[in-house]
Amino acid sequence: MNPSTGNQMNPLADHWRRPWVIEWTQYLLDSYAHWLKRELISREGTTLEQAEHVFTCPFVVVSHGLQDDPILNYGNRTALTLWEMDWDQLTQTPSRQTAEPVNREERARMLDQARFQGYIADYRGVRISRSGRRFLVERATVWNVRQPDGTPLGQAATFSHWTFL
Image (cartoon, rainbow, N blue to C red; front, side, top):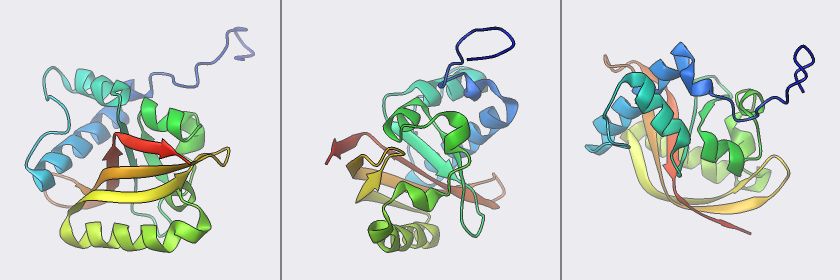
């Protein structure tokens, strides 16, 4: 509840409208197109409309920055629902915590491979939600997010196939 208005807060609020999220979404889209030579979504409309499209699409889009222990900095509505988090929870979560401890070494190897190659396709691995619900991700793509001049910004992933375990 929002104490000042008495209205219930929307855990999936329109964070995609924030200027920095609109800019980040463009980095996600541009980087995906750079590495994979195809578009993640149809790039029609304004940057605001594209940010909304990515946020509301039925597949997962999630990313983290370049910290030593990277923190998630973006998750679309599908990602927030799958990991059972709101925006604030997700964007304070170390990326490694999306995998169980037993799977973190394998996850780190995959991220290093993507960092070296620019992207990897057809990744498969087990992840865990905030409540402990495990799910198998299949056919995921992981790519490096960069500025137009090539400066690294982080990494992102997308997938539309998962199975609860």
